[in-house]
Amino acid sequence: MHPGDVYMLNDPYNGGTHLPDVTVITPVFDEADSEILFYVGSRGHHADIGGSTPGSMPPDSRNIEEEGVLINNFKLVDGASGSQLRDAEARALLAGARYPARNPDQNMADFRAQVAANQKGVEELRKMVAHFGLDVVRAYMGHVQDNAEEAVRRVISALRNGSFELKLDNGAVINVSVRVNAAERSAEIDFSGTSGQLDNNFNAPSAVCMAAVLYVFRTLVNDDIPLNAGCLKPLHVIIPPGSMLNPHYPASVVSGNVETSTCITNALYGALGVQGASQGTMNNFTFGNAKYQYYETISGGSGAGDGFDGTDVVQTNMTNSRLTDPEILEFRFPVRLESYEIRQGSGGAGRWHGGNGGVRKVRFLEPMTAAILSNNRIHAPFGMAGGEPGALGRNTVLRADGSTEQLGHIGKTDMQPGDVFVVETPGGGGFGKR
Image (tube, rainbow, N blue to C red; front, side):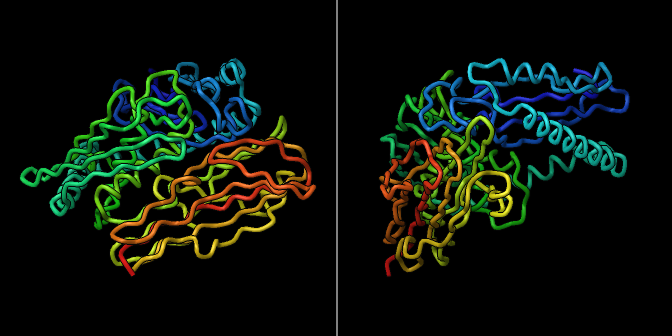
């Protein structure tokens, strides 16, 4: 490894989460270029990285190759040759898979943006070291983690043992038990009893499961602390190998990061008894053809808790993506956003009510393939402490000839000019009896 090198990966079995998400990593050397002091990284979700369907989110994949180009520690920028972008080699990588990337020009532009973002991070990190000194920066990196660890330990002291079983629409089950050690102010998070590795793409790499655990325990901390690995130090997490939360290669995993992660989060909140379920899905909607590729996640209702209502039409749990502005969507793609509105009455009732889901309608102006990856179309988001569940989601296609096609929690279909794809997202679960 040389100064100026930049690497990238998306392999979920070697540090990635799922294939459309590409992580770009830049090592930061000391002034003598002899020792790596830090690493700067950026992760970006690419509109398409190959795979069997445009958008790299196939609803029916059963093998990792069907989900796009697998990248494992590829050198994107060669520092030894003057920090040159390896453009030809990267394009060969994108074109060389069983299901190659559809728009390598777009991929390369996104890679350049990630490299530039990393470089900005490197420059700011060097400024900080120059101002405060390397010893101080390293010490405060430790202090930040130590503070996060103590914050989580204080939270654990107020928790009780609990367990929860959450059913997914595909028949899989996530089991989790939380066992608190009050004396040590630590907790064991045990996913034993969870379904084994699946023959669909709802498997989640163990890194995704760990991220969900980290997220949940960070949300329990009221202090203003940055999200960091210190939050995990008081936690011992058991994820059985060969389960759907720790699958073996080459299991497909594209839904693991976007769907199973939010189910893990709901299961943990259920075991802790702190709030009703969120919509439990990201409602991953993709469409495209050889020319166009588009992907979005669609908001729904969040769960209510003790003392607060859920929120209407909001990104919940393990997602934070924003939608493309309607004007930009319609300018760049041959579709029309017919409407996007609150799905009134879809939040679960209770002393505190769950948030409402939404209804999004997209009309197609050219023939394209559309796909949906979702959950809670069969099992509703649960309520807590006597609160009622949120409404189930629905996926419907309104054909131009007046016919209607109902899709399941996963599905893909050919859209013709005039057809409308309708996604009704689930509501959040309520909390407490009315």
